[in-house]
Length: 545
Figure 1 (cartoon, rainbow, N blue to C red):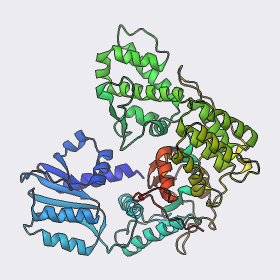
Figure 2 (cartoon, rainbow, N blue to C red; figure 1 turned 120 degrees about the horizontal axis):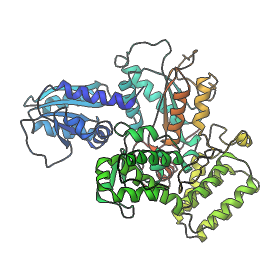
Figure 3 (tube, one colour; figure 1 turned 30 degrees about the vertical axis):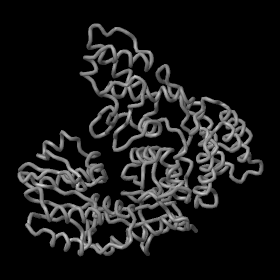
C-alpha cells in the first residue's frame, strides 16, 4: 500500500484521459501541494502539461489552444470558481476531476454554467454532503485511491475518534458502489487514534535524518527553507528532499544522525577517488563543506551531495549551538524513566543554562509536567517560575498547562506512563563523524505498542472497539492508521520498522498533520481553546469520555 504511488497513478490517469495535445493543469491551493509532492516538474512536462495555474487566480490569459485538466477539492469556493470559469472559458476543453465526493446539486450547477459546452468530462462522486470535517474527506480519498473498503476500529476514550469513524462509515455505506472493491481473504482495517493519547512523542527532539530535518529546519511539501543558514549560497536557499527523486535521501531518511554523517563521508570519498587532486582527508562535516566550496566542478557534478552536506552541516551547527545532545538526554530520561529526583535536578540545571533555547526549555518543563503530573513532590510551579526568570514569553509558559489539558492523565485512554517503562531500556551509541555526537534513542511512541498488540490480536476491544457488529478473527494484513491531531516522523519510523520486520503485514500511517514540536504546540493551543481561529482539519472537540 503506497499512498504516494496511488495518488501519482490517479493524476497520471487524469492527464492521459484527456488525450494528446498541450495541456494546462488547473488546481487549488491544496491540490497544488499534492501534485508537487508526487510529481517533479520535468516528469509532468513529459506528459504534455506545459502550464500550471490556480483556479482562484484572476489574471490568467485566454489560451484556446490548451486543454484544461482541473484537479480540485470539492469545496464550495472551488465549485464557485469553476462555475465562473465555465461561464467565460479560457481554454478549449475542460476535463474536471475532484479529489472527493461532490453533491448532485453542485454537478447540476456546473452543467448549467457550461453554456458553451466546453466540459468534456467530470469525474466526481455523487453524494449529498453533510457536515464532514477535512479529515473525513482526506481519509475517504485515500481509501478510494488505495481501493480499500476497511473494517473500522477507533479509540474509545476519544469522542472525536468515534465521530470520525462514524463519518467515514457513513460515506462507505452511502457510497457502497464506489467502495465495492475486490474482496480479500482478510479485510483491510482502519484504526483511528487520537494524538492526545501520546503528547510526549511530538515534544521530543529527534535523531533520524528525516525527523531531524523537520524538527529543526521544517519540511513543507518536501521543501526546506535554508535562506537563514549563515553563508548559504543562492542555489541552496531552498532545497527539495524527496524520497521519490533523491536516492541518497530514500536510503538514509530513517538512519540516525551519526550514520548519515558517515554515509555522506563515504559518498564524498568515493567521488574524491575519481579526482587525481582529491587527496585531502574528510574528518568532519566542516571539512566536507570546505571541500565542496573549493570544487565548483564537484558541486555541478553532484548537486545531491552538496545539498545533503549543507543540510547535515546546518543540523550539526544547530545541535552544537542549542546543546541538543544534553537536552535530548534529559528528554529521554523524562520520557522513559521514573526517577523524579534525578529528573528535577537535570531539568533545573538545563533551565539555568543560557545556551538552551526558549523552545527547548519549555519542552523540558512540558515533559516534566506530563511525566510527574500527579507526583507528590512535583516542582512544576517552581519550574514555571524559573522559565519566567529566564525571560520565556508568557505564551510559551501558558503552553505548559495547555499540554497537560490536552494530553494529561485525565484525558488519556492509555497507560502512557508507568514505572515499568525503564525496564529493558538499552542506550545505543552510534559512532559517527567528528562533530556528530553520540545519540540516545530509548523512546518508543505509544503507536508502536498499539500496533504490536493489534498485529498479535491482543488489542482490547474494550479500548479500541469495532464500528459495527463485525470483527476480525485473523491477523490483519492491510492496516491504515489515522491519527487525529497529527502524526510524527518518529511514528513513521515505527511503521517503517514494523512493515520491514513483520512479513505479510502492510501498514500506512496518516494524520491531520505531520508535526514537529512547533506545529504540535499550535495544535495544542487550538484544541484547548487558547488560540484564536481554529485551523481546518486540526481543531477537536473538548468533549471526551
